[in-house]
Length: 178
Image (cartoon, rainbow, N blue to C red; front, side, top):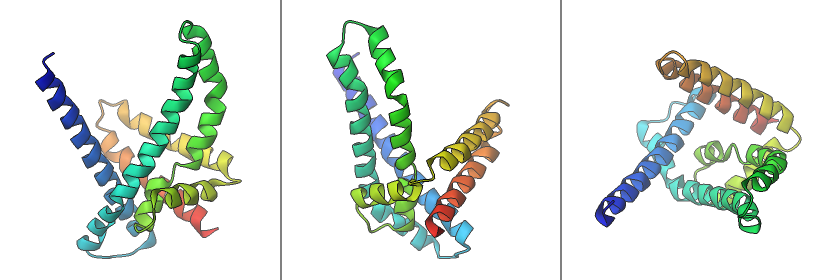
């Protein structure tokens, strides 16, 4: 593959990532507005894009930690995929624990757009503290509902994806109000 094609592919993937992240941030804010029955104008909804640098920073921190956690086993034991895979399975409960702690970063930044990436990560972590089992159960049910939407030729995703975002947003607001 020519270098120019690799460059175009990389740039298009980066642009797609940025647009997806921005759209998720705006949609998460819209979901929170619906659930809280706020009717701010469209300008206020797009003003949440101020949180895009913090959202990107939080995602980069999460991805870097994940890469370090998964890559460490491979660097230490590159000669055996079975041992590395076994170590990854042993690390799975820890990864789930941490993932549940940072699952509400986007909602946190949509709710309070002027905070930093670290503040949003900390706030998300504190929200689920002591409630990880309940959050895991609700998010698992949410995933199953969305999976059912994928089964009928992806048509159902048009209905289950918004339902999933509403459920996640309601869970976030319920945890925030306790």
